[in-house]
Amino acid sequence: MLDNRPQLPTEIARRRTFAIISHPDAGKTTLTEKFLLFGGAIQMAGQVRAKGEARRTRSDFMKMEQERGISVSASAMSFDYGKYRFNLVDTPGHSDFSEDTYRTLTAVDAAIMVIDGAKGVESQTQKLFEVCRLRDLPILTFCNKMDRESRDTFEIIDEIQENLAIDVTPASWPIGMGRDFVGAYDLLRDRLEIMDRADRNRVAETVQISGLDDPKLAQYVPADLLAKLREEVDMARQLLPVFDRESFLNGSMTPIWFGSAINSFGVRELMDGMGDYGPEPQIQTAAERKIAPEETPVTGFVFKVQANMDPKHRDRVAFVRLASGHFERGMKLLHVRSKKQMAVTNPVLFLAADRELAEEAWAGDIIGIPNHGQLRIGDALTEGEALRFTGIPSFAPELLQGVRALDPMKAKHLEKALTQFAEEGAAKVFKPMIGSGYIVGVVGQLQFEVLASRIEQEYGLPVRFEPSHFTSARWVSGPKDEVEKFVNVNKGHIGQDSDGDTVYLTRLKWDIDRIERDYPKITLTATKQMM
Ligand code: G4P
Image 1 (cartoon, protein in one colour):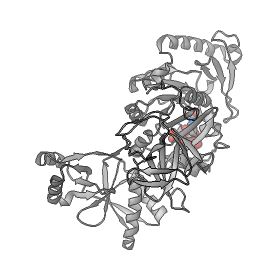
Image 2 (cartoon, protein in one colour):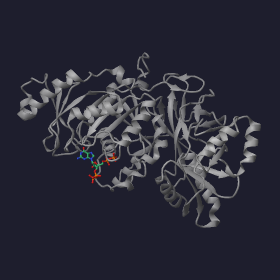
Image 3 (cartoon, helix red, strand yellow):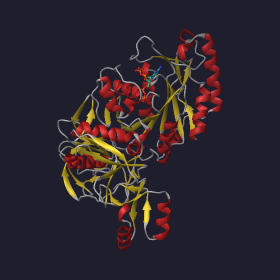
Image 4 (cartoon, protein in one colour):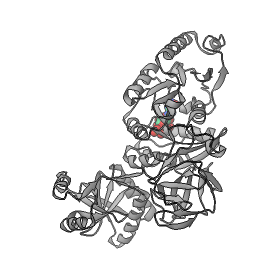
C-alpha cells in the first residue's frame, strides 16, 4: 500500500477511513467516544454504562447509544478533524462476530490497534491484527490506561514486535505511570504533553521544547522521572527503528502512542497521526480490474447490511464504501447483481449525532443506502460498468442449530425474520431439502442468543434454538450434471442458503473426506465469495 500516486483531488486526499481494533475492555469505546468528541460529532462524553458481557453483544456504537444516551446508531461515523474528514467504521466488540469484523475491515484503509498498557497484546487483538495483516493495512497503535500501573515501556514494545512480527516505532514516550503518570514526550514533534488530572475531557497542555536537554522540562517533570525519560529515550533511539512512512503504509511498521483515553490524554496526538500519516483512500480490487479512487465514475461496494435501525420504519441500510468518484444525491447507479438501475435519492451519511441526508460523498466515504432488501453484502454499485469487487468472503458457520417459533402459527414470520438476518450477514440460514424448518449457522454461540432476542424484539416472535444433527456446511460446486447426481443421492444432507446456492450439511467430520473420494468432480468449499 503506497501513497505515491500523484495528487488525488483534495476532497479525496483529505479522507481517512479506518476502524479501531482491540481486545474487549482495552478501551475502544472510550477512545471512540473521545474521537467523536474532538471531532465535534458529540457534545459531551457520557458516563453511564453497563458492565461486562451484556454490553459487548452489540456493536460498540449501539452500545454507546443505549448505555450512554448518545445517538450514534450507525456502523460508520463521519466527522471533520482539522483539515481531514475521518470515517470511523465500527467493528463489533465480541469475538463471536469475527466474520462481520472481517468484512468491515475490507471497507477501511487503516486501523488503530488499542492495547491495555497492563495487559499488552491479548488474544482478540492478535486475531484482529492477523486479519489486518492479510490486507497489509497500516496500523497505528495506542497503548491505553497509562494512568494505571502499566508494564515497562520497552517490554510492551518488545511484546508487540515479537507477537505480531511488526516493527514498532515510538511516536511518544510515556513519563511515569499509574499515579505518577505525568504525560508523554512527543518524539515526532519534540513537545511535552502534560495530562490534566482535574478534567477528564480537557486536552493535555502542550509545551514546545527544544530537545530533552531543554531546561524548561524541569518545570514540568520531577527530577527522577526526567532522568529516566532521558535515559529511556536515548536507548529507544539507539534500539528502535525511526518512523518511516513507507514502512507504516505497507503495514510493516506501527507507530505507538502512549495515553489514557478516559483522561483524553494522547488522543489528539493519535488523531493527528491518523490525519498526517494515515493513508488516503486506496485502490480497490474488482475481479475485472483495479479501481483508483480518483476515477470519475462512481463505484462502490456493500460491506454491511443493518436492518431495523429505526423501529418506526423497518428499513434496512446497506453500507457502501465508495471506491471511486464523486457521488451526488439522486444519482442513478447500476446495481450490478440484478442489472437494474437504482436511483439513490435518500442516502445517509452518519454525521454528528444524527443521520443526515448525504448530498454528496467522495471515494473513501461510507454512505448508507436505505432499501427493502435489494442490496446485499458484496454487491457492487457503478455508473454502468459490470464490476465485481473481490475480497468479501462468506465463511462456513461453525455451529448449526435448528430454530422454530414457539407459536406454530407464526412460521411465516419466522421465515421473514431469518431471511432478513441472512441478508444482513448476521447468520447463515439453510433450508434443508427434506423436512420443514430452518437450520441457522453462526460462528460463535453468543450469536444464537443475540438472534433470539432480536427476533423477539424486532418481530415480536419468541423462538427457540434447538440442537441439530448437522455440524457444518459446505458450498457445493462442480459440473451441472455431477451436482444433480450428487444432490439426488444425498438429499438428507442437502440444503439451500439464502441466495439459493446448494450446500452440503455435514454430520460427521469425515463426511467431507468421503465425498472428496467418492465424487472427485464435486468441490466442497468452506467460504464463498459474496459478489
Ligand atoms: P472496550 O470498548 O474496549 O471494551 O473498552 P471500554 O472503552 O468500554 O473500557 C473498558 C474499561 O476501561 C471501562 O471501565 C473504562 O472506563 C476503562 N478505561 C478506558 N480507558 C481508560 C483509561 O485510560 N484509564 C483507565 N484507568 N481506565 C480506562 P469499566 O470499569 O468497565 O467501566 P466504568 O465503570 O469505568 O465506566
